[in-house]
Image (cartoon, rainbow, N blue to C red; front, side, top):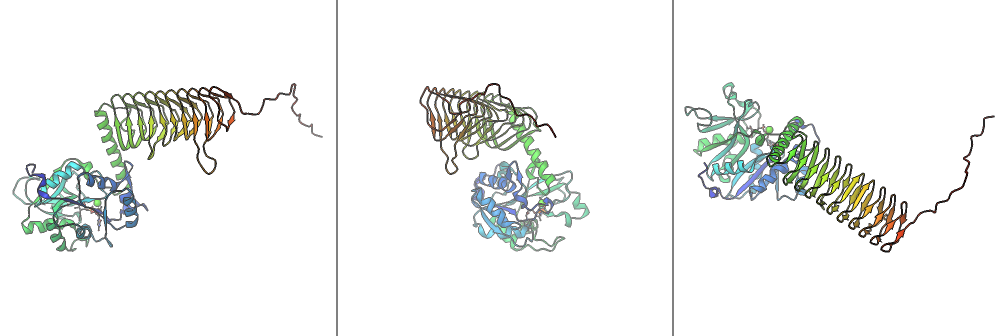
Length: 477
Ligand code: UD1
Ligand code: CA
């Protein structure tokens, strides 16, 4: 199979079946929108379709069609939708999609609820189809119950040897056929011209009264078109989701696989079973990650970065030598967050979109930073808020201080120049600039910009009354 050139098959078009109900999920949400590793099941499949360079990607929708189409359109993927109403079987599903496909391609049929199908597997399947054959993705299961069985011609040795002559669904299979352990994964590659012809000839005379896509195998055999099986060993790639338990099991299996890949690169995970990547995590050498951390979107960890237990980190760059202490939440959303080299963040810190920390910045417990830059060596160690601020080098930002960046209608910036010392419990009312080297006395509410080097105190003067007697309780009559 491998010697067949890849370009034999012409353009690749993809049909993704996603119209089924997913009754066993017992959810209002359409099944294919449930999330695996932080993304809709269907989005995993459309991503893979895009990676193999599919020309057209047609998603067959039915149950929850409007919701599925809206959610998938929002991902920005280039998709076409074909509605299947009512749902009369997998053959009927593909019938709805093929009118959208030109006559020169090979069609890859995928399922919206089989999210982890691999790119290389699909390329091999396309090569096996080679523009002239029906290629089926198959796998052997110890317990094949529920799946379509691969029926092969007799007298040519064991499984994987004889020509494939049919797929028989569980409910239609004889007792002997139910013993077959090679099953159809639900994935096939087939030249579109052949597919269109066979789909037109399907009927629904079977145990379920459905138009089975799998019946095209019999038609191919009758037409003398070779049917080839590409057998894989990796069950994760063909695992379908039908229930919350299966979704959770596949999530854990997938996370373990990602953990193994990172550990193989040298990343030290305290416990690969308590580690989740919902997106992409890129790590340099000597990264250490403690238990129960979740990484979302796109995260980069530079050399020697250490992440404490129970951190959630999304869309962020953490540069070399930085330490993120336990229970820190970082979410760059669309804007991103940068933590500079050797910076220390947390425990219990929160970095929001646009937080950009320079080198050796310290962000301590219960400090929130949003849309603010902190230059090298700046420190905000306790209970503080910095929003829409530019903080200079070596600034010390006191406990309990905040930037009042919002006047109820608009946001304004606070500029704190190099070497400023802001005392505890200060309110800096933006727009405002605190000049370089200046000091703000603790407890001040400052709403006018201050000159470089000045000490500014803006609070009620302290008054003391000597020998003050507190009121006494009046004795009961
Ligand atoms: C199908 C195959 C079976 C295979 C199994 C692998 C058929 C007849 N059988 O069975 O050989 O072993 O997948 O998982 O194809 N769908 C629609 N419209 C419909 C019916 C289904 O879009 O009218 C979609 C479903 O949403 C799902 C996919 O097609 O994404 C497969 O349908 P499902 O009912 O799960 O097929 P199986 O009975 O599992
Ligand atoms: Ca299924």
